[in-house]
Amino acid sequence: MAKIKYKKTGKEIEGFSVMKGVIRGKAEVVLHNKRDITKRLNKFKKGNIFVTDMTDPNDAVMISKKAVGIVTDEGGT
Image (cartoon, rainbow, N blue to C red; front, side, top):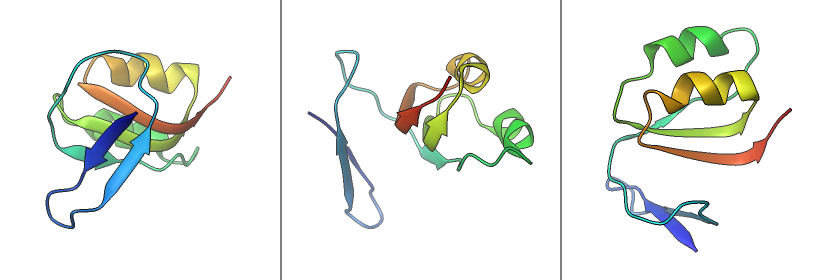
């Protein structure tokens, strides 16, 4: 079971990891909104952890070049 803990609030997110290891970085939440998702992904800072409600293949390819980790509720097709 993987966990993310927010420093400021102490709240945690739990889920299953698809890779082994530990990462550290600032969590950047980007909710999936077709209207402005591309703009938000372009502004995403390299080295952050991408937290979102869902991804699609285009998002995943674009963000994987910048993010040290990806946390998502569901994947898309």
